[in-house]
Length: 122
Image (cartoon, rainbow, N blue to C red):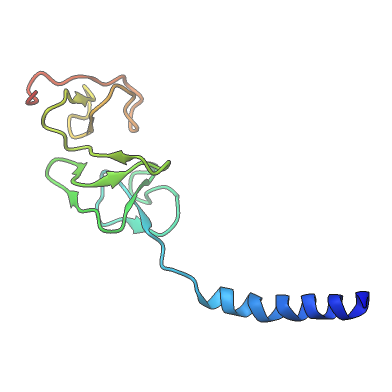
């Protein structure tokens, strides 16, 4: 009896395996350079132009090249984040004013600490 169960289990495994491999969904996320919107990949990495780390975003997200902010984005942990927030204080790199975010941090280009943007609405 043990042999028949083993054969049955291995038989079921081989039947299930190929079916599962055909049920792959397209990735929900893509990775984009915050400085070069034309650089989009399906896996993490670095921008070949500026060597910045690519940012994970939903595939449906649109990038606003004039403000270097995403109109819709999600963080890696799945929590909803919006970078183009008009009601909150914005922080900006003193050396790279195109790099903005809605929380303090360091510039990914030069490493300088972000400062509050006095020109931002909010």
